[in-house]
Image 1: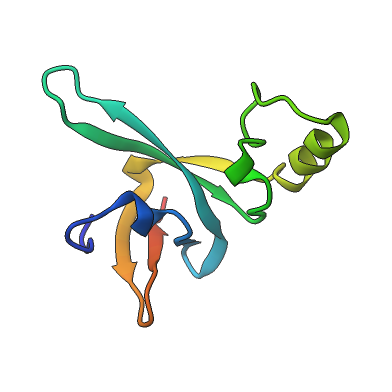
Image 2: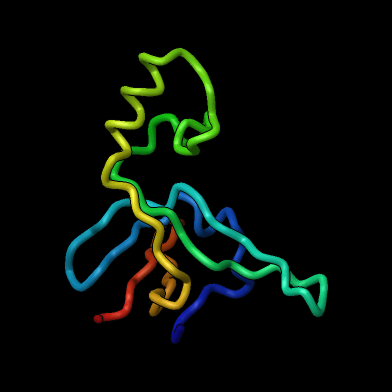
Length: 108
C-alpha cells in the first residue's frame, strides 16, 4: 500500500468506502483479523465490502447467527452482493476531508 493514515485503526476501516478503478463497490462492514503465530501481533487479512449496512452490526451477516427467520432471510437478501476482499488486493487507504477513509483496490 502506498498511502495509509498513521496509525491505522479498525474504526478507520469500518465504514470506509471501497473503490475499484472508478466505481464504488460499497463500504467496509467487517474486518477479518489473524494473529501472527510468532508474536502477539494481529494483522488484517481481509475486508468485507457491502452495499447494504443493515444488519451487519447485529451479526446477521454471519451464517451462525440465529434470529427470526423473516429478518434473517431479508438481511441475507440485502447482503447477497457482499464480498470478502483479501488484504493483498488493497492498494491505498486515503483519508478524506471531513473524516473517513477510502480504500482503493489494486487494478487486476
